[in-house]
Amino acid sequence: MLDDPFKNFVRVPRRRVTRPRTANSVQPAEDRPYPGPSEHMLLQDLRTYALPYGRGSNDGFDVAIEPAEPELTQLIGDALPSTSYHHLRLADSIRDFVDSALWRLIDGDLHLEVQYYRALDNPDDEPVAFGIKILDAERIIRHRGRYCYIVADRDRFEGPRTWSVEELDLRCLVIASLPRVLRRDLERALSLIRMSDRDITIASSFVMGNHGNNSGFDFAVHRKMSNDIVLKGTRTIGWAGRGMLTEGLLDPEKAWRAISFGRFAARLRDVAIDALNESISRAGARLDFAASLTLSRVPTGADFDQMERDLQAGERPISQLLVPWLSNEDPDAEPRDVDGGATDEKL
Image (tube, rainbow, N blue to C red; front, side, top):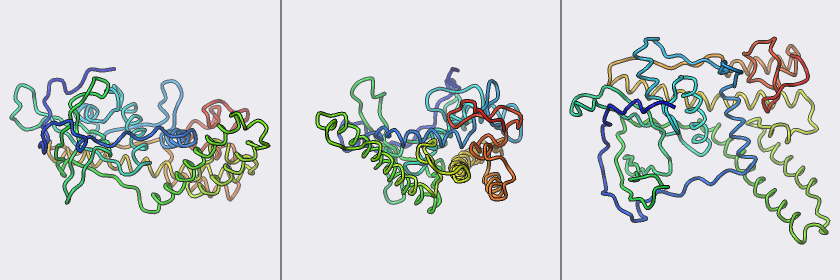
């Protein structure tokens, strides 16, 4: 953990629209409910497919800032958003950002705000640094083309809070949305996954209840039927529930779904990274620099297209295609299964 990189700076404030108050009319909606087991698994799998994990000091992917100037790299590295604390390494910051961005894109749009900082000893001068913040969608108010943000005076664990509303500068606000078709496929899959989570929870509670033991209800059959429904409904995104949904399918069909899900995760990752680069570009326009952030050693849409062609032509071992996020690793390295362990078969 590192010190706050902005401790010697003061942030350019937003324009306050309302004074602090305790009224419920200002308080944001409740936090998103914790996802059920299948939805939680989906989120974890998206992260694994979007940014592969390496071993030891290998991050599984590379990240670079261009141009590769030390001062510029430091400036942008300090600006990258984080959910808990500032990271020393760019790769850690990017993984933190992508993990958080995928969560937001699952629910709706990703909102990024570019925040500017002035030197603490000269707070009236022009900004000299910037930060990028991931905004909570439930705190955003949109009215007649204006965007405002609900802010609290303290952390929720520190006691009662007062709330106020601040206006967001549209020049500092970057909103990333999924393409319409991608959003439609995602919402259909999420609807079935969430419905299945609720259904299985109810069925499990019944079986373990006072009347479930002698009811004749076959939980295993019910679970299989539910999995089959989710399997059909998630075909467009390719998710396989780590093999639980694809039990009984042939390996080529399993590989096809793994490739489809990899392509889906890569598209979500690219939406997030494009939004991050747009935020960097806007900051550069104000602070007089030009730079962009690039990823390498990550599977792209073109990679997944080639995998699908190789699958159809039988030109690549099925064992490779079942774990497509490892496609750019050392081909002589021992492969891993979908949970990160070693497999029994050599690639």
